[in-house]
Image 1 (tube, helix red, strand yellow):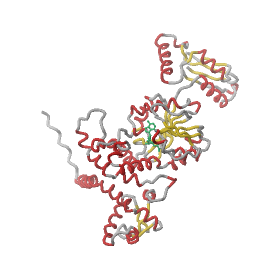
Image 2: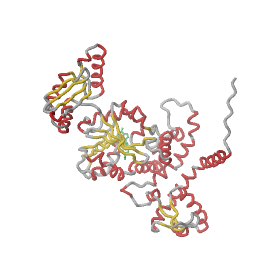
Image 3: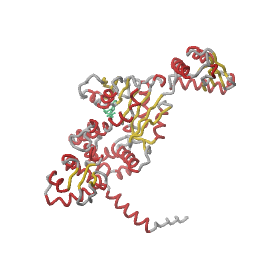
Image 4: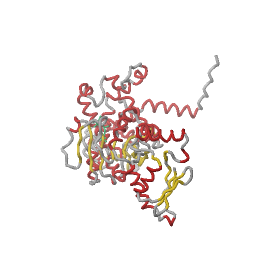
Amino acid sequence: MASRPTPALPSDTELIQAQAELWRHSLLYLKQMTFKCAIELGIPTAIHNLGGTASLPELSVALSLPPAKQPYLTRLMRQLASSGVFTVVDGGDAMSGTYGLTPLSSILIDGVRIDGDAHQEAIVLALSSKYYVEAAMGLTDWFRKDHATPIPSPFEDVHGAVPFEESMERLDPESAKLFNQALAAHDHMGIGVLLRQCGQVFSGLRSLTDCCGGDGTTARSIAKAFPHVKCTVLDLPQVINNAPPSDGSVTYVAGDMFHSIPPSQAVMLKVVLHFWSDENCVKILSQCKKAIPSRADGGKVIIIDVVIGSSTSGPILETQLLLDMIMLVNFQGRQRDENDWSHIFKKAGFSEYKIVKKLGARCVFEVVLHFWSDENCVKILAQRKKAIPARADGGKVIIIDVVIGSRSSTSGPILEAQLLMDMLMLVNFRSRQRDENDWSDIFKKAGFSEYKIVSNWELDVSSRSIHKVVC
Ligand SMILES: C[S@@+](CC[C@H](N)C(=O)[O-])C[C@H]1O[C@@H](n2cnc3c(N)ncnc32)[C@H](O)[C@@H]1O
C-alpha cells in the first residue's frame, strides 16, 4: 500500500497564528453571550439615556449594579468595544475611558425605533436562547443519524418541535412568542433603507402584491412612500386575521401562495424564499408568474433575500454563511449564491434577472418573464418607432428571432427545431414563435409598412423609416 504523504509542517509563525485562531474559534460563543448580556443588562439604553456617552462609574450606577461588580463591567465593556458593539470615546483607553454607541448598539436602544423598525433586541435574545444553542450543539449527532426523509432539522431532532409552528407553542409558549418577535424584527429590519436606496424598484409600479407580507408593515410603508402603488398583502388566514385594522392604504388577502397569488404588476417576495427548499421556491415562483403581466407591461417579481458572496467583505460574507447555518440547524430552507438563484429562476420559467441593489447581507432582485404576446410585440415595436429617426436618415429596427419556415430553414431538422421552440413557448410561457405572415401582421399593426429578410438569416421591416428585422 502506498504510504500517505507527510503533511508539510507549519512554520513557527503559522503555528503561533494557528494557536491563536484555535482559541478564538473555541471561544467565539463568548462573543454571542457577552452581546446577549449587554442587551439584557440594558447597556445601549443606559448609554443613550446618559446622553450618548458614559463613563464606567456612571454606567455602573445607571445599570444599578453592585459597586463590587464595576471591575468586571470594565472587562465586559472592553470586550464589547473590541467587537464593535460600543466605542471608546475621547481617545480614552478601554479600561478607564468613556463609552459611546456604535451604529450596532444604536439599533438596540429600548423605545427608539429607527425608521419605525420593530424592536431588534428580540433577534439577539432568540438566537442566543437555549433552544437555538442546544439545536446547534446537536449538529454532530444529527449528521451521524441516518434519518428517514423528510430529514428533520437538528432543531426538530433535539427539541421535537419546529420554530414558528404549533409544536413550538406547545413546548414553550414564552419562547415561541420571543421567536415570533424576533422573526418580525428580522423581517422588518431595514424597510426605510430599502425604500430610500431602491425607490426606483417601486416608483414606476401601478400595483404590487407583497407575498407573505405578514401583518402588512412593509406594504404600508411602500404605500406611504409611493401612494400611487396599489398594494395588496397576501398571507395565511391566521396572520391576516390578526393584522392591524386596515387604514385603507393596503388590501389584505388571506390565502396560500402555493395555490394562488393575487394578480399585480409586481409580486414581492421579501425574505421569503430562503425559508423554502429549491423545489418549493420553484412552485412559489411559478405562482408569481401567473400573477404578473408580461415584461412589456412592466411585470416583474421583486425578491429581497441573501445572496451568498454578493459581498466579498469579511464580516458580510461571514454573516451570510452564518445565516445559512441558521437555516441548516433550525429550518428546512437555505441561503443561496447567485448560481443557485439563477437555477431556480430558470426552473420556474423566468429567463432574466438582475441584482438591482446590494444591501449589506441581502440583495434586491428583479426577475422578469421573457415572453411576448402579439399584442406586446406591437407595443414594443410602437415604442421603438418613437426612438428611431426616419428611414431617410437610416432609422431601422433590427430584430433577431425565429421565423417558422423561413427560407433558410425549410430543411427538416431546422423546421422541427422551430416548431419545438414554439411548443416550448406554449407549454412554459405565454408566447409563441411566428411565421413570416405573423411577423408581417405585427409590423403592420405597430405602424411599420415595410420589412425585408436581409439574407438567409435576416428579415428587414420598413415603414416611413427603414426597419430591419433579422431572423
Ligand atoms: C419569513 S416571513 C415573510 C416576511 C415578510 N415578507 C416580511 O418582509 O415581513 C414568513 C411569512 O410567510 C407566511 N407564509 C408562510 N406560508 C405561507 C403560504 N403558504 N402562503 C402565504 N403566506 C405564507 C407566514 O405566515 C409569515 O407571515
